[in-house]
Image 1: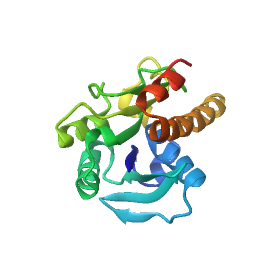
Image 2: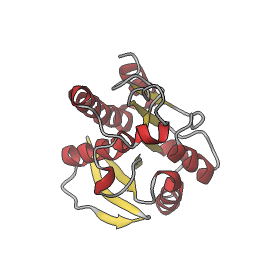
Image 3: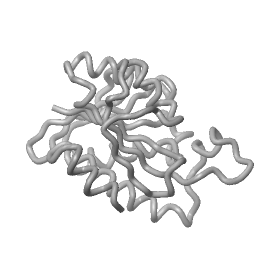
Image 4: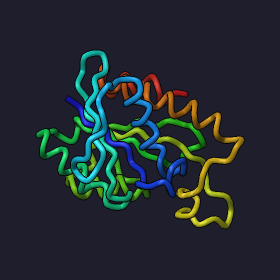
Length: 187
């Protein structure tokens, strides 16, 4: 079993923002792989699913980005999962728009949700899939940028990236991190 965590902020106010691409990817995974209903659990929304016979749990923490680790820790403890059995899907403004980057481990790189997960699990050895949301324009506060919505000219490109990210998660679940990195980091 694997736990897939999509990071974002709850509420209509944040729907469609750059910071919520993790939620969007999990929504796509649920549409593709699960007849299950969304349940409230672990301070988040949970959906049971399977990819080619492999059981997965999709978790969108509803704790707000900076407190995502609390939700992830509760789910990891409940399912008795090692950090290597968890994949965190999140935004990254240091990557070009729509670029995917899969890593086995590493620092939070400024992503506050990932930082809190690392703190709560006491390790940087957590696989993660980062989705590039583009760089903040000059003189923009990064916090304001990540909470902004994609411009019209960016929407098609990010939609394709979200589909590719969902496919990357499925590849990670069924074929492992190395295959996933080889297939999705190159493009």
